Amino acid sequence: MNQIRSIKGTHDILPAQSKDWQDLENQIHKTANLYGYQEIRTPIIENATLFNRGVGQETDIVSKEMYSWDDKDKSTISLRPEMTASVVRSYIQHNLGSNSLLQRLYYIGPSFRRERPQKGRQRQFHQFGVEAIGSNNPEQDAEVISLGWSVLKSFGIDNLELKISSIGSHNCRDNFKTKLISYLDPFINQLSEVSQRRLKKNPLRILDTKNDQEKQILKSAPKIEEFYTNDDKNYFLKVQQYINDLGIPFKIDPLLVRGLDYYTQTTFEISSKDLGAQDALLGGGRYNGLIKALGGKDTPAVGFAAGMERVLIAAKKRKKPKNKTLCIYAICTHDESLGILQRSSEKLRNLGIKVVCETLRRSMRSQMREANKCNADFAIIIGEEEFFNKTIQIKNLSEGKQESIKYQDLITYFKSLTF
Ligand code: HAM
Image (cartoon, rainbow, N blue to C red; front, side, top):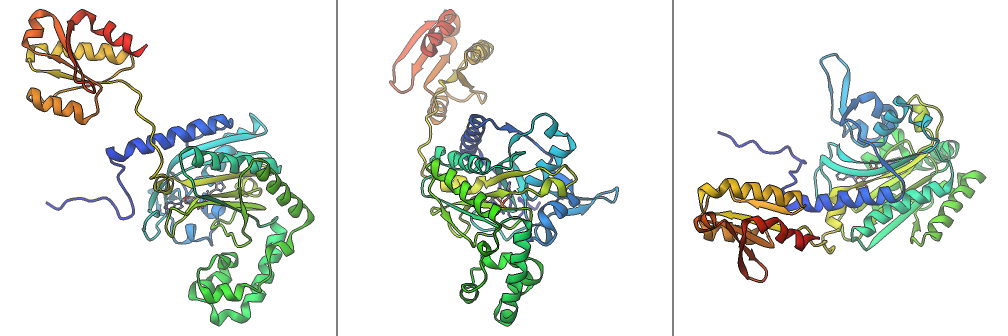
């Protein structure tokens, strides 16, 4: 029979990797809590309209990469390609703004985009992110950036680069778009097919081009900062000042283009030199119009999302924390003692000790090999002799010492080691 394999661009997270995922998830929960953010979990499927309206119909994410299908009731459903629109939908639906003027939310979970897979780019990938909904002040932008920076740093990633920009308020962006289109129009025949299409649908994305000829053309193109209002300018200066105060190094990158339509004013990305072509670890920005566009009250917001697979690639060289939980491998060479061993294991687990029990009834030698393989600190052993003497053997696997104790003293023995 044909073997069934995973779908292109999706990956199993195997047991050998899952500890790294757990470490990252723990670091996210810890850091987010330190900043006063609460976790939100939203469904993986949503009405397609949410992303059409939220992320933007002309973006690559929605127009080309979204997994959507017609459900039996004829509604169109999508696998979420990102989580900001879902969080905002949930915020509006549950009227979270009425609980508190400022909602500080964070999330962890899979997202789906039908992109061409390569290193650091999957069709199912995982994001963690935060959304701070309610504050229209630059210190909120700085806080969100600082939280993202802090998760990455505390997870042992060096070589980080923060780029920030401002795409101004809606008016500024619209004026800039018009001027950019008129500037690029005479060069249309020198633009790639993709950029020609973008010029009509999403001209700002051309700024992100990797094509040398287009980069050359863009050198004399109008710049977004020429269209900032005074408020835009002052806001952006304040964001820079607060990031500076936090001691986070950054570069201003006027060509920083985010692939989603909802941004206003601040945008940012953190990348790592340890990644290849897909070097963006984290991206985000302010999106003051989104909540209203999705049917809520006009509410300002700012957030980011990071790609967890990319974070784990960049963190390859990190020092891994040592496993501090005491671990025992429970060995049995006498079938009638199996019940006693399982009972003792349960009592030890109640003390917070990890106990792995043999269930394959292998030879003593194989069981001992298994104990070493799973990095146990101790082996406890019951055989026929121990069964009749009501004793248990304890082997310290790092020191190689072995001793026999009364079965009734087992818990006290290990209690004294853990407390
Ligand atoms: P985004 O830039 O589309 O932003 O994605 C954020 C991060 O997700 C990227 O920097 C990258 O690390 C990761 N990522 C994106 N696509 C893939 C992929 N196909 N495979 C692996 N990793 C990927 C957003 O999603 C916005 N919702 C961020 C945001 C939150 N803005 C405001 N709040």
